[in-house]
Figure 1 (cartoon, helix red, strand yellow):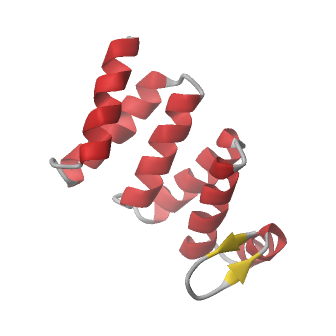
Figure 2: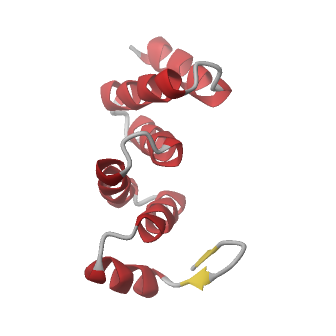
Length: 105
């Protein structure tokens, strides 16, 4: 179950909404839900769809970078971190993850 300040959604609600249209809020919530439960591949699928609609969505880039990192897909993670830093050069989280990735390589 995903809860935001205004609504409560079950995974089934989000899936039904996505069958109707590629709703950015539903993609965001389901992507985060899948990330939280450790379904990183499913999270990446939803976050990629969200980025197809909104290429500079910082939320999607951050969670997708983190999911890639946790799956040890460092090149993909680094690409998303770089996109985040192009959007906001002072993004502290992105800078820290970038450093962690460089240490791994």
